[in-house]
Amino acid sequence: MAKYVLKRLLWMIPISLGVAVLVFTLMTFCPGDPAEIILGSTATEENLEAMREQLGLNDPFLMRLGDYLNDTFLHFDLGESWTTGVSIADSIVECLPRTMTLTIITLLIAIVIGIPLGVIAAVYQNRWPDKVSMVLALLGVSVPNFWLALLLVILFSVNLGWLPAMGIGGIEYYILPAMAGAANGIATLARQSRSSMLDVIRSDYITTARAKGVPEIQVILKHALKNGLIPIITVIGTQFGKQLGGTMVIETIFAIPGMGQLIITAVNSRDYPVVQSGSIFLAIVFSLCMLAVDLLYAAVDPRIKAQYSKGKVRRKAVAANG
Image (cartoon, rainbow, N blue to C red; front, side, top):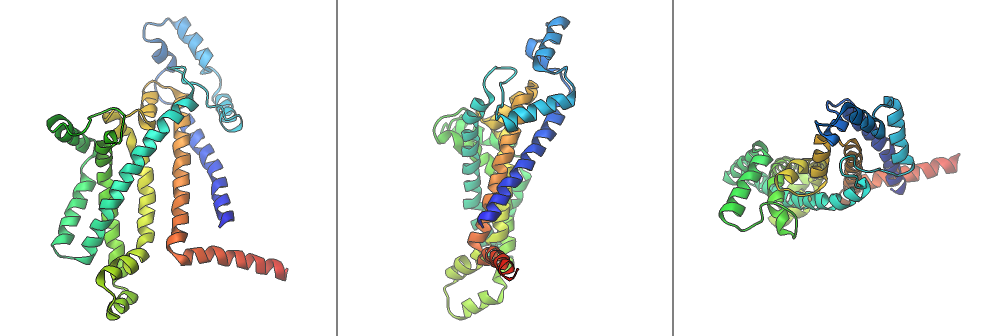
């Protein structure tokens, strides 16, 4: 298991490099002149040319790419923002916890609501609880999160005054953004949970457990749900990545100074270093999340854990015979 974790961690190096090269290339060929955006439309051509030279925009593409990769991955120097002059590392350290907090709260809401909805729909297949759950899931998939966010602000902030409409502070500032971002995750988890449970509850061991007189609640939660968790965990992992990227829209609507708002602001101002470094950090966080999902597979399903053990025993046997 330790060797597998180490292998996955090493794979993050080429993944991060690939993300860095891709984002750097996209930002380089993106329309817009960073020098003009920084100095304004009234700047003279001499000032613009001096700014381009200062930012290194006049250097060849490969030279700039090599310098960026060297500074980022060999010297761990993310540089400073072109527009604000603030250290990018400091900005990420400040913004990343807010984005992670919003993402985790959003995902927890999706798990707490979505999985029970799917289980109920499977247990009461083709009856009214199933139909109500699937209608709610369909609405969750269909409703855009930015539109739902605006409705929640109008209802809970403007009309009722229960929750703040924007900004950052205590946990109450995350409730509306998390609710708006969780709708799609609830729907996706409900549908996947229903599908997984329908496959499991038709199995022979479930019929045997019922024949032995095991209470129905134990049959569903202890036997059926536990064995149907593998595809659900996969969806949870992908939802984490989706929520992590989707916070860009939510953070903009609710004025949360997180990674999403940081990157969007940098894109609009053609602040290349901020966009590149922010994208790399999000890619690393997502890679770590998928590693955690794979480790959860082994914790939930002993057969997967046994595969790692068998591989280790097989390698020892080969070494002993050799």
